[in-house]
Structure formats: structure tokens, C-alpha cells
Length: 405
Ligand code: PLP
Image (cartoon, rainbow, N blue to C red; front, side, top):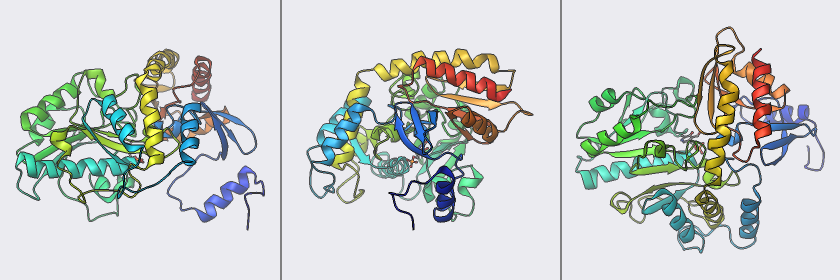
């Protein structure tokens, strides 16, 4: 048996994890022990620039002082009540999140997938109660290349074979259309359509930015068809793209925001959906819930996240540093990269055929002190914490250049 007091080296940790933890991930061989801001340190004391940032859950960096202070204080006061009782943190959090989104009401959950499930349930109930769709016939239009989480219903409408295969029977009620294709969307909606569910930028898909005007067109299709526009901003939201929400790049207000990841500041799982009363009032006591959703610990952290975002500094940093990143990476297009998509401090890089695979590129970056993750073979995504310095962004650019060569 090992104990926490026995220091283990990376090799021993890797062996232990391989032996006792299920193999549902294939991590890079680095064992992290400490994090501060944009930097993490492994058990041997080597430092790395974290350019995955917990899949954007760490937008504010590791251990942001404001979030840490808020969490410490709450840990000593009250952590869980269940929603059978009220707590003194949920109301202020919900008020602040409503203000941030421009929506009237908030339904708190924990993980991103739970929030997506919540949005699906609310959209269906809204469809039956408000739109008048005959019960059990609701359809929801989703996008090719989507990633919304891992539940059985969500993988039912995924086109990622690895995520989906052998988890059937699958949940019906979803229609898939090509992302970015307005005509396909128009053709897919009908009287049974209660919602269009999309990521305003597809994160796991490789930071796929739809054509300019697409989000506005989706808004218009939803209005015409009396369907809810549900924007999953679990990964794209909360300052990553230079705006609080990626939908803002097209001045679009969706009917429902699905939020997660950075809402818990990387300290704690906090997710939520937000909408107006006309939508969220279909939820009645007992019709949906979660033991941990809205707990005072998560609500205190989420509240602080909202207050930080309301100041706008993270959004400006994402815009400014994203421009530095793009300027630095652009010369590699045609010289190791086939494609580059950047929005705020979020980049998808397609490695040219004949070059390293996405995984190999990430291994080379690791050797140069940069942590990144491939998504779908030859694409890697860069998403450093928004507290990263300009010098560190330059370092990232140099590491990518050297690793492509
Ligand atoms: N939605 C989007 C857009 C995501 O990127 C993710 C996770 O990557 C999820 C939902 C699921 O979030 P979680 O892993 O917290 O369940």
C-alpha cells in the first residue's frame, strides 16, 4: 500500500493510475502536483505552461486568489444544504449570473453534461406546455461534429464513434444537420421542433468557428419556427473568446445558455442553464433537481466568477493576447499547419499531412514545457488560462514552431 506521505515519482504514479484507474483517458505522461496562474509543476518539480486549462474550466488560471479566498471562506461556513432548504449563497449567485447573461432565471447544476440534459428536458417540457407539441413527439436539431458531454442521451446524438458506439439503445428525438449550413437547418425544423442545440464555436470539434452570420441565421430560424435557440457555451463561454459569451460576436441572444466549466473557476464543478421565465417556469418542484446543484460552496465560487467577469478584464485579455497568439501562429500556416482558427485566446491548429500527428505534436510540446491536447487526430487546441502573460504566449508560439519542424 502507498500512503500520501510516501513521495512517488512520475513513473510510480503512472503505474499506479494505470493499475487502479479505468482507462477511459489516454493522458500525456506528466504527473502534475501544483498549479499557479498559467503554470503547473509536476512531481519532479518541472514547470509547464498549461495550454489546455482544464478544457477551459481554468479560464482564470490555477488558484486565482479571489476564487481561492472565496472557496476557503465558504468551506469554513457551509458547503451543502440540498435544495430541500434554502442557503444564503444561491440567491446572490443566481442574481449575478442572470445579470451576466441577460436572462431572468437560473437553474444550477454541477457538470456540463447535466446542464445540457437540463436544457433538453426544459426544451421538451416547454414544447409540450407552451408550443403545443403533442407529447412524446418533440424533436431537437443538433449539429454534426457536436460535443455536449457523455450521458447516454447526449452520446445518442454524437457522431463521434468512439464516444457513441456500444452505448445504445440510443435516445430518439434528435435530428443532425451540418454545422454552419443554414439551409440544412431550415429544412430540418418543423412543427415538432422544440429547440436547436448548438455550440456557437465547436470546442472539441477543433475550435470550429461557423461562417459569419450563421448564429444570427439560427436565431431567425428559431424565431420563425417557434423553437428555442439553446447555446451550449460550456467551453466557449465566460470570456474565452474575448466576449463573455461567444454568441455576442454576432449580437445574438439565445433563449437558453448552457454554462459550466469556468463557472466553477476550475475549483469545483458548477454548471447552470439560464433563460427567461417564459421558458424556465415550465420546471416545477420535483420535476427536475440535483443533490449538489445550487450548493453553497459552488454558488459562492460561481458568484465570485460572475463578479470577476462583470469587470471585463478577462474578456479584454483574451482579445489582446489572442491577437498575439494568432499573429505568432499565422506564419506556420503552409509551413507545418494546414489550418488555423483563432477566436479570443482559443486556437485550433490543423497539422499538415506528413507532419506529426496531433498526439506527437503534444508530446513534442510537452518536452518543451507546454501542455496541450489533441482533438480528433491531427488537430490540437490551445486554450491557455486568460491570466497568461504575453511573454508566455510568445514562448508557446516558439514551442509550436520548434515542434512542427
Ligand atoms: N458542452 C460542451 C460544449 C463541452 O465542451 C463539454 C465538455 O467538454 C460539455 C458540454 C460537458 O461538460 P462536462 O464534461 O463538465 O460534463
